[in-house]
Amino acid sequence: MSFSTFSKEFTSAAFTSVENPFITKYLPHADGDAVRAYLYGLYLCQCSGEFDAASAAKLLGLSLDRLKEIFSFWEECDLVHVLSRDPLYVEYLPVSSAVGKPKPIRPEKYAEFNRELYKQLQKAGRDLRPYEMQRVLEFLENNQMEPQAFLLVSEYCVKKDGEKLTANHILNKAAKLCREQKFTYEQVEKELADFNSHEREIGKIFTLLGVYRKPQEADYDLFAKWAGAGMETGAVYACAEAIKHGSLSTLDSLVGELRKREIFTEADAREYLARREERTSVVYKVAKRLGVKVQNPRPYSEDYAEKWLERGYDAESLTLLAGLALKLGYGFPELDALIDRLYAEGIVDEGGVRAYCAEQDGDLRLLQKIQSHCGVLRKTQSALDMIAAWKSWNFSEAMILEAAKRSANAAAALPYMNKLLSEWKRAGAYTPEEIPERSAPAENKYRSEAAIAADERSERERYYAALRDRAAAKAERANREAQKDEAYRAAESAVRKGEIELAKAEVFSPAARGKIEEKLAEARRARTEALARLRLTEEDLLPRYACAKCSDTGFLPDGRMCDCYPSGLHKRLKI
Image (cartoon, one colour):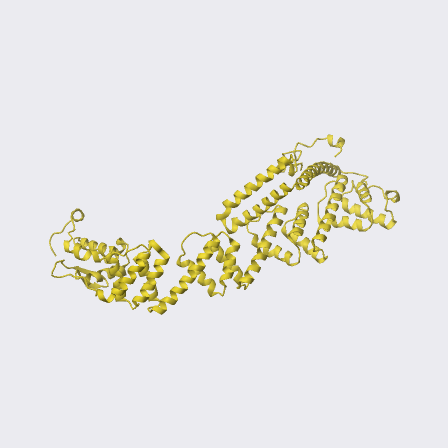
């Protein structure tokens, strides 16, 4: 070892000499990676200090195996001598005319191959550089793949990439086939025929989904997974059509749903997807009528809508029942229990459901009249069943209201009414004149402060209940007037359809939201214009409460009583 050396600063500021013969003879035959590795190794020869091959490969952005392959190439050119391959240790040799010639590949051996490859490249408007052609010929020399089989690979890449074709893509595809032990023309033809077939199918799926990009290997793998599970291609197309706008991951989820139900054929898939679409539509319609926001319709579809439709209920009947459920304060579970009850009673067809809802609406109106005498009563199915029972006893509405008047001071109004009507039924009294004298109004001889406070609460609740009923009735009249107009009905239908599509897009195809929102906005404008022509507004279709602070409930959002109650005045109001 010499007693002196260059400092790092001196070395970094110096120059690395490259002999001209290297540039003229060898550089045209080498690719960029090989040139970079050669020059960097030449530079390291002048540097003192440790710098192993792994570090050099990492710095150059190459794998260690690729670096070893490059220096094997330079060794064949007699420019270096590889002293050790593991670890890699290279000795650089001088470049001169006497030594260092590239290892020749006989041109006559690949003359026909070169002509055919050139024709393929012309179709793509591409040409390979000399060093790229050198790599192709070296690949054929060092691998068992037949030249005609390689031409099939290059033809496939030309069709797939067009002007973006690269030598790396051709070589990588050929190397992959070699790793799979596919060397002959027949083997490669069969493999690429499958690829091309899948490419057409993936292309159609992309069109159906509105995907605008080139297929990738992962897309082919996904299609192979579906085919391997026994799914017909037509069934996959049907799923893509159902999604309309989405990604392959969304499609994979839907295909997986069909596989779990053992649906593999196109006919079965289309039938299932049609039923699925119907269930989803029912879920959104019912949710809208109930005032419930549904993010993902699938659980509601599987738990409720599927059962309802299988029992014979249609969308119109279910919407009517949802409207009744809204008045009773029900959600999906309570509505489901109501439908179970109706099914047990044999009420399934639209006519039967419509008659049932009309009867229940009449009972609800009667319950509101009872409230005007007895105070606020909960709108429950139990209360409606009690009213239905009284009617079945052949009591008229006038007699039921007479019982309500006589129960006004009772602690529990409905049970007391039931007691009175039972006594009248037993006595055969079906008109006010026939009521026995002993049936006196319920009185509390000794009224406590709690009873007095309860009466005051009842009066207050009756006051606000009457205000709410008045506002709801006015809104209902406006809705009936609007529904008479054909243009309004069409716009309202378009708005409902758009809201359903938008809710579905939020889950299945977020990319389509923009177009759906534009159509929905147009439908809403049309609805507003139709209302304006009828001298109505969107606000007219909703209850207008007398007090904006409490919405005629008597209580503010924080639980405090509202100051809008006219203390003392209510006794003089006829509400």
